[in-house]
Length: 318
Image (cartoon, rainbow, N blue to C red; front, top):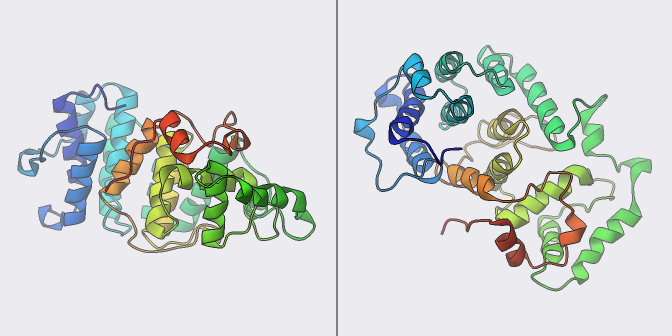
Protein backbone atom coordinates (compact mmCIF):
# COMPACT_ATOMS: atom_id res chain seq x y z
CA UNK A 1 0.00 0.00 0.00
CA UNK A 2 2.85 2.42 0.78
CA UNK A 3 5.05 1.56 -2.21
CA UNK A 4 3.98 4.61 -4.21
CA UNK A 5 3.68 7.05 -1.32
CA UNK A 6 5.48 10.35 -1.88
CA UNK A 7 8.01 11.81 0.52
CA UNK A 8 5.54 14.56 1.42
CA UNK A 9 2.81 12.04 2.14
CA UNK A 10 5.17 9.84 4.13
CA UNK A 11 6.26 12.72 6.34
CA UNK A 12 2.65 13.77 6.89
CA UNK A 13 1.68 10.23 7.96
CA UNK A 14 4.61 10.06 10.37
CA UNK A 15 3.67 13.51 11.69
CA UNK A 16 0.13 12.25 12.25
CA UNK A 17 1.48 9.31 14.23
CA UNK A 18 3.46 11.71 16.42
CA UNK A 19 0.41 13.95 16.81
CA UNK A 20 -1.44 11.03 18.41
CA UNK A 21 1.51 10.22 20.68
CA UNK A 22 1.73 13.91 21.71
CA UNK A 23 -1.93 14.21 22.73
CA UNK A 24 -0.84 15.39 26.19
CA UNK A 25 2.00 17.57 24.90
CA UNK A 26 5.40 17.01 23.34
CA UNK A 27 6.90 16.03 26.69
CA UNK A 28 4.58 13.02 26.78
CA UNK A 29 6.10 11.47 23.64
CA UNK A 30 8.01 8.46 24.98
CA UNK A 31 11.04 6.59 23.71
CA UNK A 32 8.69 3.74 22.77
CA UNK A 33 6.62 6.19 20.72
CA UNK A 34 9.70 7.41 18.88
CA UNK A 35 10.95 3.86 18.31
CA UNK A 36 7.53 2.92 16.92
CA UNK A 37 7.40 5.85 14.48
CA UNK A 38 10.98 5.20 13.34
CA UNK A 39 10.18 1.51 12.74
CA UNK A 40 7.03 2.33 10.74
CA UNK A 41 9.18 4.72 8.67
CA UNK A 42 11.74 1.98 8.06
CA UNK A 43 9.57 -1.09 7.47
CA UNK A 44 6.31 0.21 5.99
CA UNK A 45 7.17 3.56 4.46
CA UNK A 46 10.58 2.23 3.35
CA UNK A 47 12.52 5.21 4.55
CA UNK A 48 16.29 5.27 4.32
CA UNK A 49 18.62 6.60 6.99
CA UNK A 50 17.76 8.04 10.39
CA UNK A 51 14.42 9.79 10.81
CA UNK A 52 14.68 13.50 11.63
CA UNK A 53 11.95 13.88 14.25
CA UNK A 54 12.52 17.60 14.71
CA UNK A 55 11.53 18.31 11.12
CA UNK A 56 8.23 16.40 11.26
CA UNK A 57 5.24 18.74 11.38
CA UNK A 58 1.98 17.60 13.01
CA UNK A 59 -0.59 17.94 10.22
CA UNK A 60 -4.08 19.11 11.02
CA UNK A 61 -6.71 16.50 10.10
CA UNK A 62 -7.94 18.52 7.12
CA UNK A 63 -4.39 19.02 5.85
CA UNK A 64 -3.64 15.30 6.06
CA UNK A 65 -6.87 14.55 4.22
CA UNK A 66 -5.84 16.93 1.43
CA UNK A 67 -2.51 15.10 1.08
CA UNK A 68 -4.11 11.64 1.02
CA UNK A 69 -6.93 11.75 -1.56
CA UNK A 70 -6.63 8.02 -2.22
CA UNK A 71 -9.05 6.39 0.25
CA UNK A 72 -7.14 3.11 0.48
CA UNK A 73 -3.94 4.95 1.37
CA UNK A 74 -5.81 7.15 3.84
CA UNK A 75 -7.27 4.05 5.51
CA UNK A 76 -3.82 2.47 5.87
CA UNK A 77 -2.38 5.70 7.26
CA UNK A 78 -5.13 5.77 9.88
CA UNK A 79 -4.24 2.21 10.91
CA UNK A 80 -0.73 3.42 11.73
CA UNK A 81 -2.01 6.38 13.72
CA UNK A 82 -4.47 4.20 15.62
CA UNK A 83 -1.73 1.89 16.86
CA UNK A 84 0.10 4.92 18.22
CA UNK A 85 -2.76 5.50 20.65
CA UNK A 86 -1.78 2.31 22.50
CA UNK A 87 2.02 2.06 22.25
CA UNK A 88 2.50 3.21 25.84
CA UNK A 89 0.18 0.50 27.12
CA UNK A 90 -2.73 2.61 28.34
CA UNK A 91 -6.29 3.31 27.24
CA UNK A 92 -5.92 7.06 26.66
CA UNK A 93 -9.09 8.92 25.69
CA UNK A 94 -7.14 11.98 24.51
CA UNK A 95 -5.12 9.94 22.03
CA UNK A 96 -8.20 8.13 20.80
CA UNK A 97 -9.97 11.47 20.30
CA UNK A 98 -7.17 12.61 17.98
CA UNK A 99 -7.41 9.36 15.99
CA UNK A 100 -11.16 9.86 15.63
CA UNK A 101 -10.68 13.46 14.49
CA UNK A 102 -8.33 12.26 11.75
CA UNK A 103 -10.86 9.55 10.82
CA UNK A 104 -13.60 12.15 10.33
CA UNK A 105 -11.37 14.31 8.12
CA UNK A 106 -10.20 11.30 6.11
CA UNK A 107 -13.80 10.05 5.81
CA UNK A 108 -12.87 6.59 7.14
CA UNK A 109 -15.62 4.58 8.85
CA UNK A 110 -14.09 1.17 9.57
CA UNK A 111 -15.52 -0.95 12.38
CA UNK A 112 -12.46 -0.72 14.61
CA UNK A 113 -13.08 3.01 15.04
CA UNK A 114 -16.39 2.25 16.73
CA UNK A 115 -14.53 -0.18 19.00
CA UNK A 116 -11.98 2.35 20.22
CA UNK A 117 -14.67 5.03 20.57
CA UNK A 118 -16.66 2.66 22.80
CA UNK A 119 -13.56 1.86 24.85
CA UNK A 120 -12.77 5.57 25.29
CA UNK A 121 -16.31 6.12 26.64
CA UNK A 122 -15.73 3.44 29.27
CA UNK A 123 -17.74 0.81 27.39
CA UNK A 124 -14.79 -1.57 27.21
CA UNK A 125 -16.93 -4.70 27.51
CA UNK A 126 -18.95 -3.70 24.46
CA UNK A 127 -15.76 -2.99 22.52
CA UNK A 128 -14.34 -6.40 23.44
CA UNK A 129 -17.52 -8.17 22.37
CA UNK A 130 -17.29 -6.57 18.94
CA UNK A 131 -13.59 -7.48 18.65
CA UNK A 132 -14.48 -11.10 19.39
CA UNK A 133 -17.23 -11.03 16.75
CA UNK A 134 -14.95 -9.52 14.12
CA UNK A 135 -12.18 -11.98 14.94
CA UNK A 136 -14.53 -14.92 14.40
CA UNK A 137 -15.93 -13.41 11.22
CA UNK A 138 -12.39 -12.91 9.92
CA UNK A 139 -11.45 -16.52 10.69
CA UNK A 140 -14.62 -18.29 9.56
CA UNK A 141 -15.60 -16.03 6.65
CA UNK A 142 -19.19 -16.07 7.94
CA UNK A 143 -21.15 -12.90 8.79
CA UNK A 144 -21.89 -14.05 12.33
CA UNK A 145 -21.84 -17.10 14.57
CA UNK A 146 -24.93 -17.87 16.57
CA UNK A 147 -24.74 -18.99 20.18
CA UNK A 148 -21.66 -19.23 22.40
CA UNK A 149 -18.45 -18.21 20.65
CA UNK A 150 -16.41 -20.29 23.12
CA UNK A 151 -18.36 -23.34 21.99
CA UNK A 152 -16.89 -22.76 18.53
CA UNK A 153 -13.36 -22.32 19.86
CA UNK A 154 -13.63 -25.45 22.05
CA UNK A 155 -15.70 -27.93 20.01
CA UNK A 156 -14.09 -31.19 21.20
CA UNK A 157 -15.28 -31.15 24.80
CA UNK A 158 -17.28 -34.12 26.02
CA UNK A 159 -18.90 -36.00 23.16
CA UNK A 160 -17.15 -33.71 20.66
CA UNK A 161 -13.76 -35.43 21.04
CA UNK A 162 -12.35 -36.70 17.74
CA UNK A 163 -9.63 -39.34 18.31
CA UNK A 164 -9.19 -39.93 14.56
CA UNK A 165 -8.39 -36.25 14.02
CA UNK A 166 -5.96 -36.29 16.93
CA UNK A 167 -4.23 -39.37 15.51
CA UNK A 168 -3.80 -37.67 12.15
CA UNK A 169 -2.06 -34.67 13.73
CA UNK A 170 -0.02 -36.86 16.08
CA UNK A 171 1.30 -38.80 13.07
CA UNK A 172 3.09 -35.63 11.95
CA UNK A 173 5.88 -36.53 14.39
CA UNK A 174 6.93 -39.28 11.97
CA UNK A 175 7.71 -36.81 9.18
CA UNK A 176 11.37 -35.89 8.59
CA UNK A 177 13.04 -33.33 10.80
CA UNK A 178 12.80 -29.89 9.18
CA UNK A 179 9.52 -30.63 7.45
CA UNK A 180 6.64 -28.25 8.01
CA UNK A 181 4.38 -30.93 9.49
CA UNK A 182 7.07 -32.12 11.90
CA UNK A 183 7.78 -28.53 12.94
CA UNK A 184 4.06 -28.01 13.54
CA UNK A 185 3.91 -31.11 15.76
CA UNK A 186 7.05 -29.99 17.65
CA UNK A 187 5.46 -26.55 18.17
CA UNK A 188 2.52 -28.24 19.90
CA UNK A 189 4.65 -30.52 22.04
CA UNK A 190 7.04 -27.73 23.07
CA UNK A 191 4.12 -25.58 24.23
CA UNK A 192 2.10 -28.39 25.81
CA UNK A 193 -0.89 -27.80 23.54
CA UNK A 194 -3.65 -30.33 23.04
CA UNK A 195 -3.78 -31.55 19.44
CA UNK A 196 -6.96 -30.89 17.41
CA UNK A 197 -9.58 -33.46 18.36
CA UNK A 198 -8.45 -33.72 22.00
CA UNK A 199 -10.99 -32.56 24.56
CA UNK A 200 -9.20 -29.33 25.57
CA UNK A 201 -7.93 -28.45 22.08
CA UNK A 202 -8.89 -25.36 20.14
CA UNK A 203 -10.96 -25.63 16.98
CA UNK A 204 -8.88 -26.88 14.08
CA UNK A 205 -10.38 -24.09 11.96
CA UNK A 206 -8.55 -21.53 14.11
CA UNK A 207 -5.65 -23.46 15.59
CA UNK A 208 -4.22 -24.87 12.37
CA UNK A 209 -3.80 -21.59 10.43
CA UNK A 210 -2.84 -19.68 13.59
CA UNK A 211 -0.14 -22.11 14.65
CA UNK A 212 0.98 -22.51 11.05
CA UNK A 213 1.55 -18.74 11.11
CA UNK A 214 3.71 -19.20 14.22
CA UNK A 215 5.81 -21.85 12.48
CA UNK A 216 6.11 -19.99 9.18
CA UNK A 217 6.81 -16.57 10.72
CA UNK A 218 9.13 -17.85 13.46
CA UNK A 219 7.35 -15.93 16.24
CA UNK A 220 7.11 -17.74 19.58
CA UNK A 221 4.09 -18.03 21.87
CA UNK A 222 5.13 -15.50 24.50
CA UNK A 223 2.84 -12.49 24.94
CA UNK A 224 5.24 -10.54 22.71
CA UNK A 225 5.21 -13.33 20.13
CA UNK A 226 1.41 -13.52 20.10
CA UNK A 227 1.22 -9.81 19.34
CA UNK A 228 3.71 -10.25 16.52
CA UNK A 229 2.00 -13.29 14.99
CA UNK A 230 -1.39 -11.56 15.13
CA UNK A 231 0.15 -8.51 13.45
CA UNK A 232 1.74 -10.78 10.84
CA UNK A 233 -1.72 -12.31 10.34
CA UNK A 234 -3.35 -8.89 9.93
CA UNK A 235 -0.86 -7.98 7.20
CA UNK A 236 -1.53 -11.30 5.46
CA UNK A 237 -5.28 -11.73 6.02
CA UNK A 238 -7.11 -8.51 5.19
CA UNK A 239 -10.55 -9.33 6.62
CA UNK A 240 -11.02 -7.03 9.62
CA UNK A 241 -7.25 -6.68 10.18
CA UNK A 242 -7.64 -3.98 12.84
CA UNK A 243 -10.99 -4.86 14.42
CA UNK A 244 -10.41 -8.61 14.40
CA UNK A 245 -6.64 -9.04 14.88
CA UNK A 246 -4.57 -5.97 15.78
CA UNK A 247 -6.80 -4.39 18.43
CA UNK A 248 -7.83 -7.63 20.17
CA UNK A 249 -4.22 -8.69 20.67
CA UNK A 250 -3.13 -5.20 21.76
CA UNK A 251 -5.96 -5.02 24.29
CA UNK A 252 -5.32 -8.51 25.64
CA UNK A 253 -1.52 -8.76 25.48
CA UNK A 254 -0.43 -5.14 25.93
CA UNK A 255 -3.18 -3.34 27.86
CA UNK A 256 -3.82 -6.37 30.07
CA UNK A 257 -7.56 -6.48 29.31
CA UNK A 258 -8.83 -10.05 29.12
CA UNK A 259 -11.09 -10.68 26.12
CA UNK A 260 -11.76 -14.39 26.65
CA UNK A 261 -10.20 -17.51 28.13
CA UNK A 262 -8.51 -18.38 24.84
CA UNK A 263 -6.68 -15.07 24.39
CA UNK A 264 -5.54 -14.64 28.00
CA UNK A 265 -4.06 -11.34 29.17
CA UNK A 266 -0.68 -9.69 29.69
CA UNK A 267 0.66 -6.16 30.02
CA UNK A 268 3.37 -4.27 28.18
CA UNK A 269 4.17 -6.91 25.54
CA UNK A 270 4.11 -4.72 22.43
CA UNK A 271 7.57 -4.49 20.87
CA UNK A 272 7.45 -0.98 19.32
CA UNK A 273 10.02 -1.82 16.65
CA UNK A 274 9.38 -5.44 15.72
CA UNK A 275 5.60 -4.79 15.62
CA UNK A 276 5.96 -2.86 12.34
CA UNK A 277 8.41 -5.40 10.96
CA UNK A 278 5.81 -8.13 11.62
CA UNK A 279 3.22 -6.01 9.80
CA UNK A 280 5.52 -5.62 6.79
CA UNK A 281 6.39 -9.34 6.79
CA UNK A 282 2.69 -10.22 6.77
CA UNK A 283 2.03 -7.89 3.85
CA UNK A 284 4.95 -9.39 1.92
CA UNK A 285 3.91 -13.05 2.18
CA UNK A 286 2.41 -14.33 -1.06
CA UNK A 287 -0.07 -16.77 0.55
CA UNK A 288 -2.85 -16.31 3.09
CA UNK A 289 -2.75 -19.12 5.64
CA UNK A 290 -6.31 -18.26 6.73
CA UNK A 291 -7.74 -18.34 3.21
CA UNK A 292 -9.99 -21.29 2.27
CA UNK A 293 -7.68 -22.17 -0.61
CA UNK A 294 -4.63 -22.85 1.57
CA UNK A 295 -4.36 -26.53 2.50
CA UNK A 296 -2.26 -27.48 5.54
CA UNK A 297 -2.02 -31.17 4.65
CA UNK A 298 -0.79 -30.46 1.16
CA UNK A 299 2.22 -28.65 2.68
CA UNK A 300 2.97 -30.96 5.62
CA UNK A 301 5.82 -32.86 3.95
CA UNK A 302 7.51 -29.75 2.52
CA UNK A 303 10.50 -28.26 4.27
CA UNK A 304 9.81 -25.24 6.46
CA UNK A 305 12.60 -23.24 4.83
CA UNK A 306 11.38 -24.23 1.38
CA UNK A 307 7.88 -23.03 2.22
CA UNK A 308 9.23 -19.74 3.51
CA UNK A 309 11.09 -19.22 0.26
CA UNK A 310 8.03 -20.24 -1.77
CA UNK A 311 5.80 -17.82 0.12
CA UNK A 312 8.30 -14.94 0.15
CA UNK A 313 8.59 -14.82 3.94
CA UNK A 314 11.28 -12.30 4.81
CA UNK A 315 13.77 -13.14 7.61
CA UNK A 316 13.24 -12.28 11.24
CA UNK A 317 15.21 -9.42 12.73
CA UNK A 318 18.61 -10.39 14.09
